[in-house]
Length: 228
Ligand code: DX5
Ligand code: ZN
Image (tube, rainbow, N blue to C red; front, side):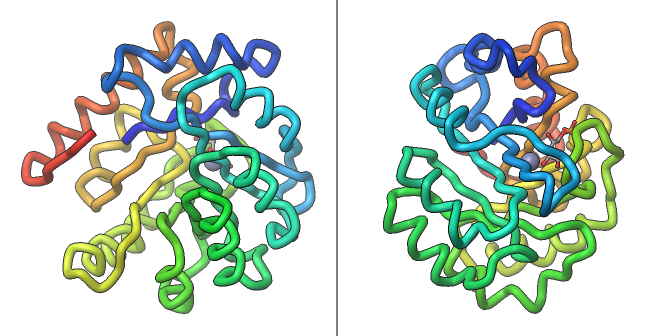
């Protein structure tokens, strides 16, 4: 799956920017990644629930909200209740991540747990059993256009092994610095869902950029079965 990040889009034209990656059925973006930043958990400030509610009305793409905020235990549920398909919180910010996952799922969303690049996976494996996805950050959260950190792929490989051997059931998502040059290594390590901001919205034709990224993933992983 490819999830373009609207952090790199034109915030004054979000409806058009969502359309620009929708593409033909089955060929465009799978999810639309929305980075919510509160200027506390990360130094940057972006958008919040009112903008997400407007986006929900204007696009048919499932929204993938990545909450880089303090106290997600209080705020994340509103995104799920609004109709966001996938709500991801940071393990470094959540106080009761297991209860939070249950609430998100009860509200009809998929629950995602994200780890910053320096956060180890092992202490959170039990918590992860309650989640639908693991979002591995491959840059320090807060800004688009940063360089991919290949060392986080060790976490991806570990989770992939646990999933493939039936010990865990999560989708593996990666976020930060994904482009034509880095996506193959991430695919080989076992990522299922690739977030890309500048590589998609910095391109002349964002829909074409999504298709090109997907082609690279498929070419890099001939042994894996990709279903739509
Ligand atoms: C960074 C955000 C990313 C960002 C990725 O904190 O979580 O989703 O948009 O942007 P690129 O793909 O440009 O690294
Ligand atoms: Zn993100």
